[in-house]
Each structure stands twice: as C-alpha cells, then as structure tokens.
Amino acid sequence: MFKTRKPVIASTLDEYAKDPKANIRNDCVILDAMAILHSISHIPETWGGLADQIFNKVIKSYLSGSKRVDFVADVNKPNSIKDGECSKHLSDSGLIHVKISGKDQKTPTNMQSWNIFLTS
Image (tube, rainbow, N blue to C red; front, side, top):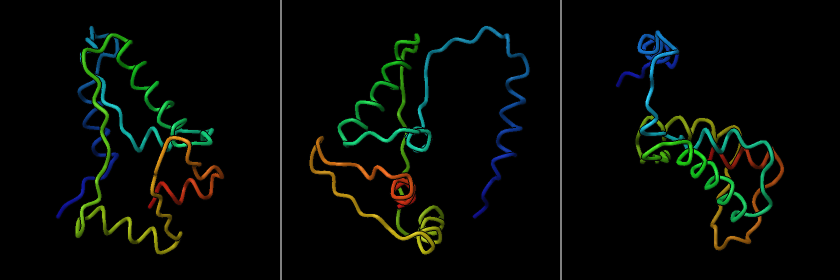
C-alpha cells in the first residue's frame, strides 16, 4: 500500500487556493477530532468539561455561517497501516486504557499522561 506524504497533499491543496481573496462560501466546516484534542493547551479536569469544550468549537463553527459541520474522528482497525503505526509508537510510550463512565470522571490532566492517552 502506498502512503502519500503530507507535504505532497499540502502542495496539491495549495494549487486549489491560488487566490485567497476569492469569494468563498462557508457551506461546510470539517473538524478533525484528533487535531482538536492535540490543540488543547489546558486539559479540563473532567471528561464532561472536555466534551463541553469540544462541543463549543462545533457550535462556533456552525454559528460562523456554515450550513453543516462534520466532526471527523479516526478509527484504528486491526491489521491496518494506522494500527501498525500506533503499535510502533505505543511500544515506546506505554498504553493508557480509559473507560469513561460519566461526565464527572477525571481526565489525565498532566501533559505526559494526556499525550500518552492521545497516542493510545
């Protein structure tokens, strides 16, 4: 299987965005769940707080005039390329299993635990 390097994809997208002043309609916003999780600088104390923080980003996108907001998250299927890459990363960093049982459950609030959680 062939994987495309991100710079190649970025340069292809740049070709479609030659004129930044073009009249662009904001019909749809696509939000990348992992990008949002990685961009969080202050981790809320609870999973409910995290859900509220993410939901607020989704609502802001909708209120910006979008007719539709897509919230896209990864799924690591067994025996996939992504699963193999995650397994390789986890062998170095460990693994955190989290079963979220309610909105008041505590999140891994220190950055090291949070980063390990994100790669799990």
